[in-house]
Length: 483
Image (tube, rainbow, N blue to C red; front, side, top):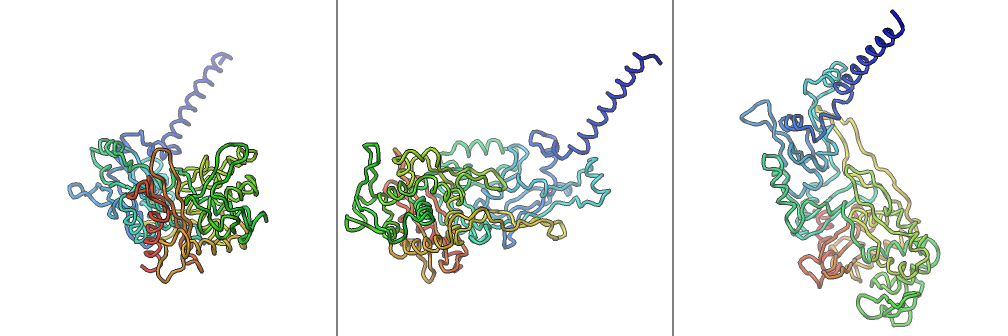
């Protein structure tokens, strides 16, 4: 064989080798990827009739399951028996509009692999269990329902966390919707109808939307000042009704339009309990953006959280504010460019309740095989130390006083010590967004909570965090501690 012929033969055999490798890749190694791709219509249609594993709550209630179709014993239909209170977490699986929530994030665990494909046959040969798995959440079913009911359909969100473990106990986005409408042939139309609704039920307000936190940012300023040593609970600050911002003609004034103390000086403790804007604006200027940014970062701002779905990242632009004391003062009361999700604000409450250590929030507890054996669990994981234990202890005491004698009195629960902080974030041309964060029992916290109500809820322009969000938090805390 001469040289050119030999080279041609090598090229031909090499090409066949590449084709064989490519076919092997697509049929075996890459099979799962292409099979689960939502653009694969044939596979999507096939998977909707396959059995999927259970999604259950922390207390074992079934939130999603597959049931046999009466007309076809080999086919399954997905059902969501717990209803729309759980949709923002459980999500849905649809051949026409894709997957969402836990159904999407844990799809490879939930779906049956008994599809008689090459990759599944190979897995079976090596003894792999091809049956669908069960995913257990950290969500408490009764608490989730209580939180959803407390919102009464108002636009907003509630997130409750176990401060010591980071387990998400409730994750409510309101209003919600019925996921079963995405299971049939009219899924596309149903989704468009939801998209057209003015109350936007498809938005995940709990973890994927950012809002100005208003006065909920004040505990972060306090933590920075206490840890830096620039202030303590009894430190006295000037007590004006309005504070002139350095280098500008603008001012910051107290929400109540009156002085917080005697009009001369006011302690940090009193200013915190009464939520005095002028005090915290000056405190922020004194402690500086770098220290506040450090505390904010420890509490979840600017951090990427490992979660089943993409979360919005809370922001406190410390570098931009370092040389702009006027902007820093406005940011100290949760305005300007400071933004956070209810999930992150629940982390703030949880970090204070947990002695300054912030646990990374997680919403899945375990994955079980078809025989009920645990094959994977999500252990608690510390995210950061946001403040010293001493600072956290003082902040927790101040937050308890906010509920017993300050703006958060409507969050009080009989027989339970509750700590909290209210927030009212004004919006140009609209009613304010109102907030409450808190924890209970204050002497040994087992729940930390964030409540957000958009546009003032039913109260509209007259709404405050204390009048609207605090009572909602009370209902949730009461359900947890006395239910």
